[in-house]
Length: 251
Length: 268
Image 1: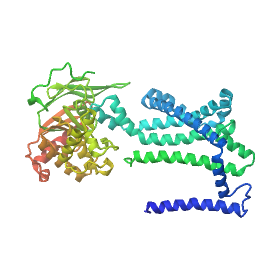
Image 2: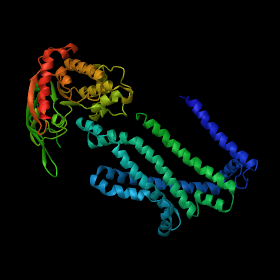
Image 3: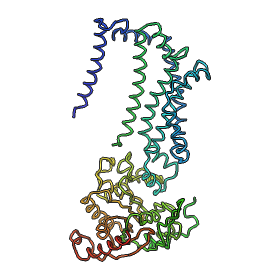
């Protein structure tokens, strides 16, 4: 087995190689630099954009929408998922329907969200919520099902109260799956909100990226892509870090 | 539910650890028919005895054990432990050891052992001290900080036994605790269990599929038949203690095992 250091070095090398290739392709004109501005130019533009008040405002708008949609969808979906998992009748009725709903691409409903909510905060949060809730429901169901009957029996045989069972058996059993669900939900949530912004919006970073694209401002466009990608990856890694700390016992 | 509030207080310590099962029946109602899992089962276990329940699959031996643990209610008859009926789990009177996957994988060995005490709000220091004693008793001193996935199958079951003993109940119920272990570990664990039993003087009721294990461990073997579950024989194992590996090939051992096997073959 390779050491962690060697593996990390290899990863860094790949990233550096991609950036170098990007730089070379653009600098040498193999790819038209107007279509693909060089990496260095893009990062300079990124630094520039981040200092602009307008861009900062757009980022704040998007962050607020994303967090609102997330804060609504996660508890709401978790409660529904829990009820489905704990109630046989409800599960039998609802599960196939959920799978149907989950299989539909959510983006086709976007025009309806605009008609119902108008263009603005509610439409984007609503669509973010809608994009996220199904995966939260399904993951929570999986999480509840990951609780072992044997463990519940042990708790019962030692006289655990319902609260003790919830906090000492359900929660720790479900935590690894729940954290993973949280991470994947955020990917869906972010996609939903940005998509809503790009489709019809007056502000937000998704809207700005769409504008840069339409105006053929490739440097800004690429910088915007890097910006959103970095935010998404940071959140993802953060939850993954918590995940590994909480799930060390999983084999 | 008020636990045992309206029940006569436990009789003096002489009864502690005694188990009495009287005319117990269990009927499962399904849509098409009623399935009789247990029919008129009566037995008595004196304090400090090691009793093994054997029988073919579906004979209700685990069901009977779960009734003694208060985890399942019979449809007829009574189960009495230490002189009072068992209506719900009562960790003061009964400790339970389950099959292998019953330890909480997110807790360390010592936290698993402390779990029953934590549920009752025993202070941390006292909990730790009791868990250390229990782990020492089962031969796992120094392994308290490991998680279950860092322990072997035999060690995990030792932790389970420590968890069952940590509140010092007079009765220990064991539901096929060594079923998932390999043969060698199983033999070692049998000897270990007998050592622990001798050291603590608990009443043990032990469910197993293995006839050899049954005769090797028991003072008494109770043989059950399937559909409906009934007691068909109650043997006294007169082999001296401590039990040794050599006894396995002796005549007494062989004839006892044959007698049990004939019952099981008949009912299966």
